Image (cartoon, rainbow, N blue to C red; front, side):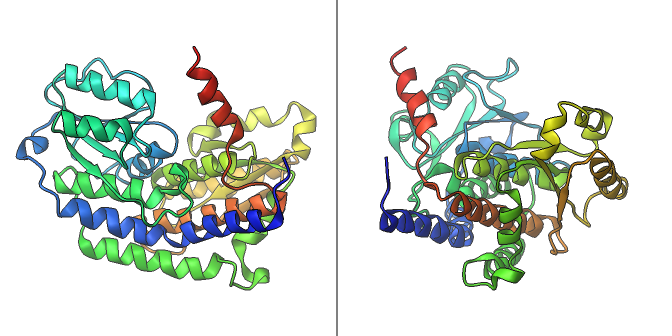
Length: 354
């Protein structure tokens, strides 16, 4: 099907407007949950299970990576139909579905209720919204006014802000209002660096997108950025319709480098993108230039991105802004629809017939 130019431009604008609204998404979700009443029993838990699929789970991945050594309660992210065997009345199950109709998440919600776990839901409505009301569950039923694209994968500010605010609210992690304000300030600053009004010659997101075109981007990250780069990988897949893979340092140093030899023809397609950080642990930082050296010696080119913020939480969201713009510009390089996901939609439609 041919899409007229005006229609495509409108869709591109929706995506660009949504990226610019990420700080507003974060602010809205943080503030609204901070004002909510959460029962004290939600603080008396042994573990946290987060259930969500696709874009609805991205925020939890980002915060799980950021809070790896900060969380006071074990957290497991589940992208399945069921729940871990240990889930019981001392568990907190967070279920997240942007549309409220994700079948895996709905099944996990009913399973959590059956096991008498404490349940907190995050959604815009749908079936999950109905369950919140029917079962009188604690939940965040939000109005996505700052997501003009309407796409779950573009609601990252909501998804991450909701989880971060809720975990802070129940005392599982400590994040201050000042930290959120600083993070939002950094996000707004880098939006100015990467949006379409910025000078193209100095726009790193544009430069990366141009170099990725025609390549298979292999994303490399560590520690507090691994969840954010996972999000970027998904956006490259869904929005830019580009196959991408993610590996982490130091784990990849124990296997992936030997896998660069074959098949030889892939060396013409691979492009490694390293997401380095001055806030990684010292030994991990040392591994980045050494790994890049090995990659180059195997005939595979690479790019290096490093956030400038001096604290981890702002780096998480600074990197999100960069990666989202990179995927957006790659979509324009390919001149494809940035919103439609025909194969995902086809699959879901066929699944309903089974």
